[in-house]
Length: 195
Figure 1 (cartoon, helix red, strand yellow):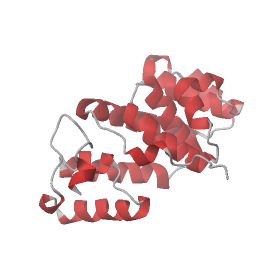
Figure 2: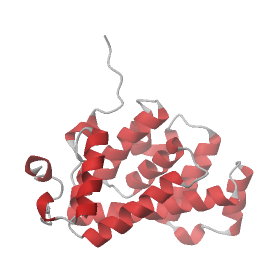
Figure 3: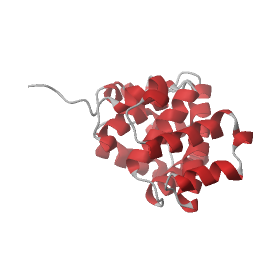
């Protein structure tokens, strides 16, 4: 575990797995088994176990209890993270866009400029809203919500878009604070190989 944690974050010490509470250690081990490596965000947030628990409980709720598809969630994460220049989340969630979006080019388009990405008008409306809520939240008015309803989103889905946006603004800022580094594995996940 020590080798994985060396670059998890640069500004705070990464805790030793043996010193973590059992529930935190078990969650990290489960994620490691599932991914095949330990995503550095788990090691970084383990610095404060009570924050780790709250962060991942809310994250789980956002991706499990939602009217959004996983592709839509990950698109929001990457567009918001691009607006915030968050290296960790752009790389890690870019990998998830490639997986859930089944499109190896989409993540790069979203990171560079979601406005030129090959996406539907509905998805563009969703990302316009997420980036506006990130960069200029006072512009989010009832008229803005109505435009999302006109694009096909229910009020619950709009809440979900806002919740994912707000959560990843927090995540981006913590990644900047800690100088979290994406695992090398994230850089190659979801790209098709030619034979």
